[in-house]
Image 1 (cartoon, rainbow, N blue to C red):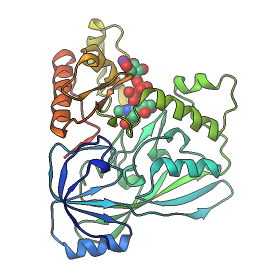
Image 2: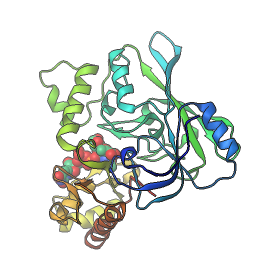
Image 3: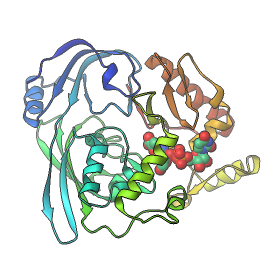
Length: 336
Ligand code: EPU
């Protein structure tokens, strides 16, 4: 078992690169270690489970214990002529896993290339990009119940996936720790998702295959999103708001260029980036905090910003968007 560290800076464990301290910090490498640790500390409430730290904003020092989950491993547990079911442990890096699937010619997650973070976080917010979401390939996951300290299985329906959300981010928030996920990938991939025009237009004269799709996605993401190793960020800070058609019509009268995409049940998805740009936040900053020049939905730490500065800045974006457009932005990033 690794040592419990005290008063530990987690600057290297969050992609906003914020220098906050955790009262206690421990890295866990196996499921047994995790179960032992939680059995010993039964009833302790103030535990935060940290994966890749790429979707969390620590707004202040953490006055409890951070358990850093670093459980590794993957294995194919079922195989037919067409598909495999692969089980991946929560501490594996998501992008490295995508690269493994492409090297082995397993299709289904190529559009999710270069998403930062670890596998364990993927179901919590149902990661998605370029027309594909985790739920499209998800089979089930193994989780540890915080209440009983027992392992449980959640199938896809039980996870209640939604746009950037799941049961683990809504009604069962903080009740389970994801141990591993099972995904169904295709062995002979022949159908690819090119529904996003920005992706499709890159394949006019290029062969459509897994590695080419992944390569193009990586190029697009690199051109739009800052590399967290160079500029602190957590990807999209807010979700794209989904509004009713009446509200859209009203807004279109005032802002005829407002981009909008049809969503489910007669609702429309609006790019939050457009709203943020329109209210002038590309030119705003608060100390070292600002938005990324190529994608204003991404809030960046250009140096030594504190978590509370980032939160203040995010809240001022939220307030302006509400005042100007009467739209309530919801954070995609978890705020602690
Ligand atoms: N836009 C602007 N100004 C800009 C940039 C973009 O107005 O400077 C507007 C444009 O209308 C553009 C639209 O924003 O067409 C959409 O931009 P983009 O294609 O970059 O996508 P997004 O809606 O901002 C979402 C996801 C991303 C994902 C991309 C591609 C959310 C919250 N974000 O971003 O996911 O990579 O689509 O599928 O749904 C993440 O979740 O962290 C993330 C990066």
